[in-house]
Length: 281
Length: 86
Picture 1: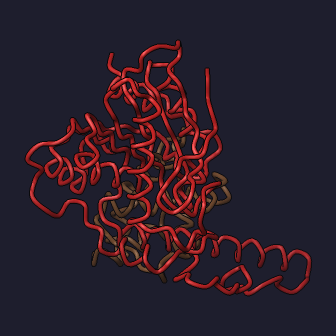
Picture 2 (picture 1 turned 30 degrees about the vertical axis):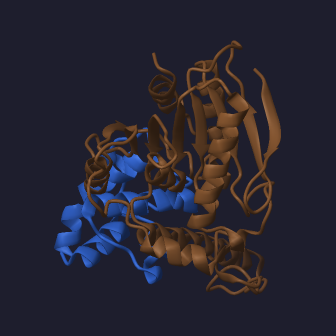
């Protein structure tokens, strides 16, 4: 299955991406742009996104996944990443995908978590025919609070293990028992550290203002699918509000959250759902 | 305390669902340490936190994110009762 690593010309420096051609080769049923999660969730979801891109290619679609500015192998530092820069990157990647394809295949945005929020926001503006939003982040402030909580839980767990190890060995604590980690200075321009990533003030500011369900329902726009990942079999209230706002249908999947660093999350049902929605039956 | 005890069955059900455990919820003891009994790490523990926010409509603040507060079904029920004003 042809997969081509490449660099995408972009506004503020090249973006690294991988292009998956349809398999078997031929005209693409759709040009699918994958928009990944943000911060710590991006690292955990990397492998799953690669597998999902391959599933789309096997379904006859051309799929492009890429690193936003300040992440992975793309230009820039993490403190420069913001929602605005991510939106510019998505627009540049969409233009690249269309130009590269040249076959008029309809554009589909396939977003995950924060990338799903971008897909919902950008779908109409980028002229996408379809938008699939997997576990979108509806409110940026709530997501930030959870990211901070996740970091705090991790520090608490490390502190607990260090304390247990010290008690066993009779040695002193290796670092501050309150945090489990020695304090590290933040790089210039960083507002805070989340999961080991320096986050810029602009991203924090833009996330704090992000409320995806606010606003009037879209008059028209892409065919939109929202995938809720939860044991709940009916849409959560915030997902129902998003569905109203973007005139989307909702599918509820009880699968492991692959944007968490789990050992072997199985995205099987999600892969099939996305293949059918993006590439057609 | 009686209010938080009433939450225990729901909390145990949520633990099983969120951790994808192959056990009956009632087989989890009120004071079983989830970290030791099921090898739960901070990632899995965070999934329980997300599930609690979804299921009970509670919101946790920075100072709540301590392993000890989410280590057992009883401690989790206590946190939820505290946050929901039960």
